[in-house]
Image (cartoon, helix red, strand yellow):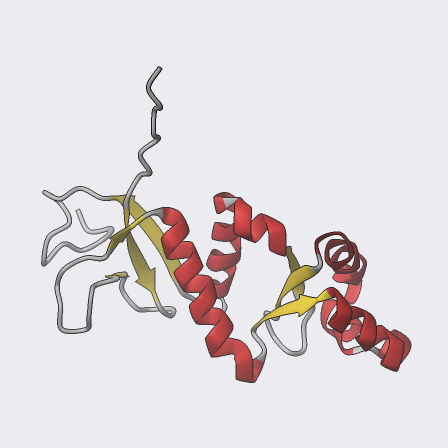
Length: 163
């Protein structure tokens, strides 16, 4: 009996970086016009990593461990940093970090409630991870979109969303 391998679909990713901008495809370099073609998971992992690194200063996306979560409450009680960030979503974040050991916290705006995302689901469920990435791009009025790769269609000069 031969083993059947599932072939992962390959995509081209288009990003609208802010409100009023146009969708731009990921290319191999700024000067290159060759589209980057990857699986959905590869694009999601890249974007989450990029936002995580970019957010280290302003704390847009934080990966919080169980130990960090517990220490925050132990030292600050009900005035803890994470309770202040998460508001009513604190209890769901606490359950997630307790069961999974880690939780992602997306800070939409410093004065508004942040949102907890399951670390495990972000790692394992492409649809769930895509929702996190969509939320990240939406912070600045941007969007992210994917098209299944078509070598005849995705050539230099192709514009997403323009018929």
